[in-house]
Image (cartoon, rainbow, N blue to C red):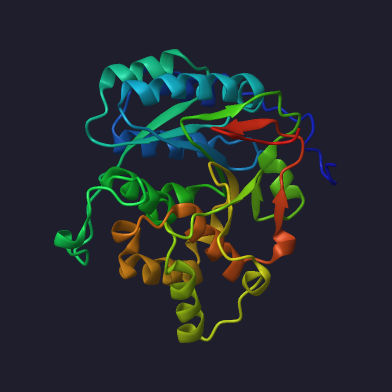
Length: 307
């Protein structure tokens, strides 16, 4: 059940003379990164005092098969959450993302949409001759996405501007109305991280990750949080991930993700962002600050919540 706070029925109105105009401009003019960040800055200057500073993000590919899924994901999220709470949605995309798709996205939603172009670059420390075209069923593009979620997002300026975020995948489906503001729920009850489901990662796809984490613990002489009792290969199913931004911006996590990144196995072995971030949480965040989000009916591929 929901705890203290007024997360249940709080919606937020937009001041017509300021924020409304900003959001109207967002919908009217697909933007580059600089304009997007300028609009975010103006949006935050007019942010309602009691509303958590939060954003939702998707990482999108300009592929027809993926966009078909995304239309359903966006529609379900709007219908069952964001029409009421009106948080900005950030669309991360690569350079080849068509302007016509941007315009179509904006035409299909009432949510404020901001586009941010990112560039996927194989790091210099990766030996390209060792890269396999497919590993654990994933190509290079998928491994870039894993690195983005695990590392590059934490380094993005947005994470400094906001206090919370929700990550959704292009095939994430909300199935019923969410009866409360998920960001208020975290803030008012002093949670750091919220999840819906857990699952087990394939040992083949995470070979060496737990061992590398153990070496990091020993090298840095740290006392981990719930890592000692967390089952090996168990992960938060993080295609729905509501979180404080601050935990990913700490020196502790930066040190850990840099250590893991430089092992190279995100590219060599397809280490996923879910196990990496799960381990990061287990090292640095108290279990008391983590919550299974209540009363959210959600499906991703073959996994679904009980609500």
